Image 1 (tube, one colour):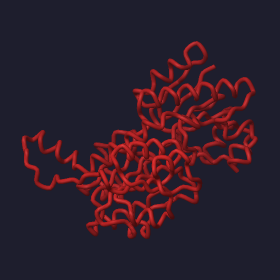
Image 2: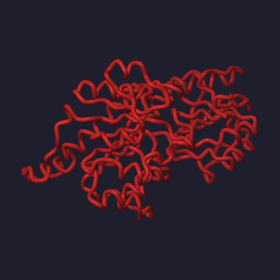
Image 3: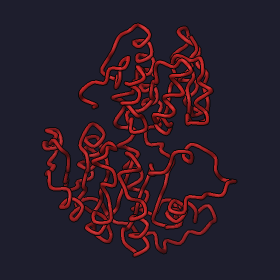
Image 4: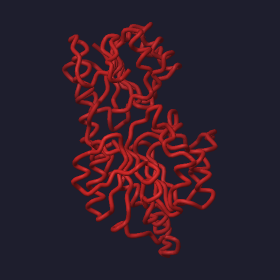
Length: 338
């Protein structure tokens, strides 16, 4: 059988093709799935998708009409998928429930350290043989307070690193994590975390309840010299409110690996295009903001685990089996994701 995979990165392609070798052929496409590209999946029983693909009801209907019975998403997040529409169409939807939490946690710390120590402007200067230190002063993180929003596997890995820095640990989540408590974390209301933290890092999924979790009110509560890092989902931050906060001269640094309107932008070369997103364009003008292109997960270990789970999901679908990664199984939507 041949599978069509959308949104495949160049470094990801050999891993994906190698994992399916001897099982199925994989047609790898470097562009995303959306209403315009969905007809290309005609005749493919299985499609594999990325987090920036559009699996709305309209796209799913096009896929189903073309014979697609399964979408195997190569990510943990699934906010881009209309699960109820998939169930109504009798489709199977799989995802990757778990992969290396260290990839994202380590990258979140990379962003935090880079904006704190002004690493990007420093590197740009030295490449031009400008060795001045003017404007590059950062702060010790030892002894300061970190606020970890979401203490699942990634948030816990991030917390372990914060503990190694000797930071005071504050956490917010629906459930307290015993491992984080052992490290000395104190769980507090969200508003208190925003107000007291010198560094806020986001590690929760994007749901209707968490969309714009960091809104104008949350930003107003934060310290003027706080650091904000988001390596989870772009929609957790109200970006327009963030721009207004930065224009007011507040926040010492912001590190973003995700952006709420990143679909169609991130993972593509737009260097010769006119960017019509005024919010993103303005965000990129701030010297204390570092934006990367949703690459926190992008390590050989994490992508290898993602690909391996994708293979399991496809094989289980073809064998008529379900597993813990399935969000919809042949039109049946588990109660946990309803």
